[in-house]
Image (cartoon, rainbow, N blue to C red; front, side, top):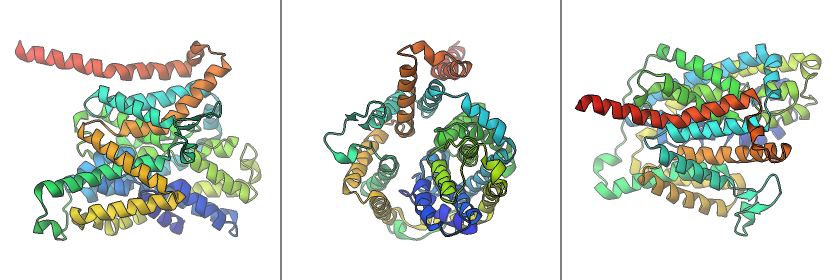
Length: 481
């Protein structure tokens, strides 16, 4: 468990390497181990990597994993304010709390919560994807129109590759590399990492390089009372657990929904995006509380909650364990052992996570930016090339980086674009499946009470900008009157 957690933190902290890649490499190496030892390694890697993604997100504004995108919103502003150590501490504690809450839910509520999964069909999943996308597009940034345009660009990118319903190849321009679509790692690194590097280079060219820029220094940090984050942890953990039990949703949606809810319910929502520790806590507790919860449908129904759960399910099958209703009855000692390992590895983050992040990775902040920029580019290219050994993806990353830099200069928010790429396939596939089932009847999308509820939430989110506009007009009228 200790070894798995350490490896997971390192994998999550290296942009380009994801939890999925780490587990895919680890499973063949676990063949000779006993099932419980192998599952302990997987549990540690899973929890460790979900927290590890927050480290570069906070220090460099580069999410180590897709689920850490929401962590950049307030994590990096805290770093710019000199509070990187506090941000890492909040992220570590939040990940541990979220992971422990998720494992507790798996231990106590697996059978009844698995029934919730059965209530969700293609229409419900379509509305969940739509709600996540609309929420981020409207609530992140100051201009909802630009947010929606950014989200639509993400949906356009997600449509590249093979159509999962008809099998047709779309928008590949004759390139075999695009048949499977655009690799999310390419988009993630290109849009988040490269624009930041280009901005560093622009700053260096604009004002020149001073002697002070080449000196190694130490940053100061303002401590933040952890006790103030307890309500945020509770709310985000509940959201993450509920999202986790839905197959295909994933920690990305959990993190964004938790962040949006924390911002909506806070007394000072305008402070979010400017270095509010509650934003970091909400994002990290949300994505980590998805971890064990995503195993609920996997273990009880044999339906993987996400790609990571599918790999762990493969690890169970390799060791002769058949996920499904009979797993808890026939192999209870191994299943409950795995649940306890998910709990223990979450607690290990308190010690291992803080030690590694602050004593090793946080030293990155002591490196001058003019030296850091080329080092980041080298690590980006190395990490991306090791995934598929593809030069084409390197050129794509550069293209996305330049595109992201242009959008950033035009003040278009990038997170909705990334989420559009992540959720686009899920939304399209479930929409078209629902229409095929209903033979083209669009009202089928609102047939169930769950669909109507989520669709209502989508409408409410879309009305938020109008409400803000009316309130601002009223405030101006009162001032002038």
